Length: 410
Image 1 (cartoon, rainbow, N blue to C red):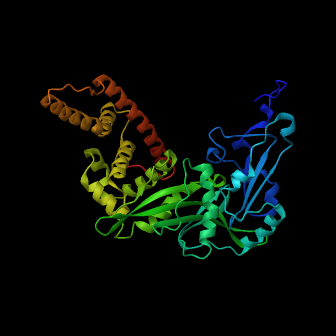
Image 2 (tube, helix red, strand yellow):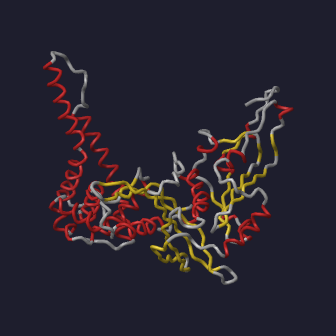
Image 3 (cartoon, rainbow, N blue to C red):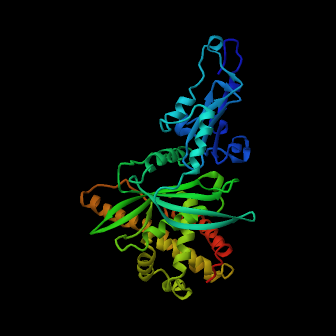
């Protein structure tokens, strides 16, 4: 952008991801502690595809939450703002764009926000405690709990409406769910900690939403939709524990057919693979003997009955556990493994071939020529090999974690 004198206004264009500052405030001192700050992974769902804001220099947009109840403060600072009289352009609206995504009751005054922090002293998570665990972090033992809640819990609707705003910054193409649909289940993770004065309080860590789909004739099929561990708590294995908490709720229920996941991210798929592999490793059908013999129906039946894992995921876990026991330095053993996986990857192409032959017969009966073609075999083999290599790299990351963290060797 240029002014009438040819000068540039580029110094007034800022990256919206960089200028946003989030905080989860447990204590007033956290307001000035940079260690409690974190950034969004994306901001295009608020500021557009370019993820830029025009009209300010040294812009900082402050979006602060109290750690427990998530009371929200929104404010901004800057050193310079574009002058419309001088440049005939206006600065972008900032606060209104962010505020439109938040609940109506937000603090624009920092003093009132600080006063609201007192509410966290009596805050207790809504719903039922279903899972608890501890994590050793830098010689400190930290306590975490997972609660299952619904909209009938007092105060939960307001809490969830504040919590769900985080998906805008960390889950691409995210939408706020219909909280009036009672088929949604909510799983919320908190850290249970002691304040400097010795009081027990709860800090928000992350959450997951699960939708209850109907499965004929009288079953349900829970589908995990959104999963988020907030940045300050990532890389601690908490996503694994959140999934285990969800499993605790469903795997013991006879009316649950199986558990699915809606468009899992790469990171969440690895967490799911890790947890499912540990579980399936305990089943007789996944012993070394049967893994080497190949995938079988007993694996599907046992994994579904014991852990509510669907068939597609069971096959994936079989391939991961078989890779775990495969001696890659043994040429024949490794080749057998690759062929086993590639055979499965090639199934869609085989179906395409069959469909193509059927179409050819139809066109032939009509005395017409078909313009539909399939990729030549050489090209198909290259595609198949690439698919396999990508998949194996994902599997190796899971296998590495199974060995190092779970001590899993078959």
